[in-house]
Image (cartoon, rainbow, N blue to C red; front, side, top):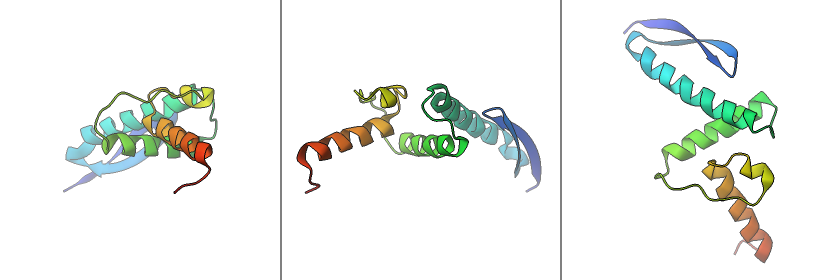
Length: 106
């Protein structure tokens, strides 16, 4: 199995990644998903730090991969609403609201 170097761009920054010859299309598809997820968070305007954007995008993608497709939960928090279809952030917001109402976890 031979490896090759592929140059890609994520949020306007170039990266040189290694991948097997037959894996380039899969790698490019993954890069497209990561780039789209990161740009969506950046474009919402609430988070500027690239590392925080990357972590949120990774969490969102992992959550989407492990969750059946459902409609996103609406959020009343304007900061969270900027990420409208971000089910993970909405779920965390709902959890915070529930815990704040009761003040206790159990």
